[in-house]
Length: 339
Image (cartoon, rainbow, N blue to C red; front, side, top):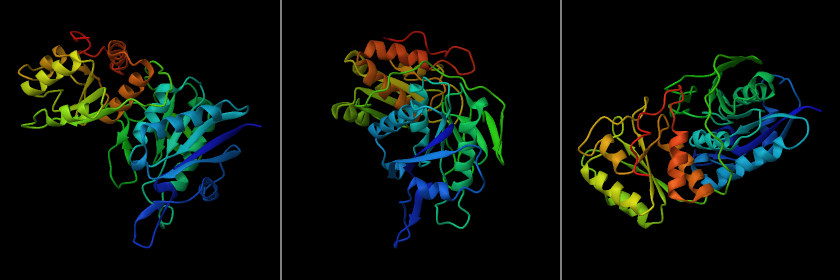
């Protein structure tokens, strides 16, 4: 019998207020499925994987979710998998699931912005929509998706862009790939997907270091001293730092630390435009640009690559492959790297 498997991991969709007015994840998957607002098109089997707010998840937890997705897809009759997840770090878990996904069937992440005990909770409809997408034949070969507030997004490049509003997610550089309304799914674009990555325990340490006016190397040196074998720079503009950061990047990459270059800017690619510690100098010092990926997803990618390959030269090469512009043009920073 054909079915969709729903994996529950917690988040606001499963949360209720405690006596102090704080929302905590508590509902099991059976409770989530009992609240669906309309009949979904296929039988559903629910499974509890975790029950926490996604701000508490570790990379190892995200690897567990990816393994549970793979296990569900290995069973006969499964059309697709829906995953309920907190919105805070859904962009990381969904992107990891997409990176390691080697099956044509869809994996669809969703959640809620309002808790289960709110009168206007958005979780039940989001979950019904996610199940609908996961069961739809047209969702095949699109990798991992995020379905939220009636929109369907590719995992890659999608991030949370509203803290409280119901339309929590967007893909600033590409927009949604489809819509779902009242049990009907319409796809308007095919997601660009990168090379597959081996699924591991994600045991490599990778930190994000923010760059800002007057930044020195204290944070960058500290995370490496703490054991980071990879660092994502959240640079300014199109990917800029300063001469002190440039010198630190050269020193660290010479020591085998992989440094990825992203940006704090909402949209657009990283681009080598400036010297004097800007993007041109950072790339020459060994930083690897991440194209359209912002720091949250660049970190997941770098963590997965380091865990899978260990060798920093191989990791830098693979990182460059993944950072190609999703619109088809090669990332302008893919040349001239130190590695």
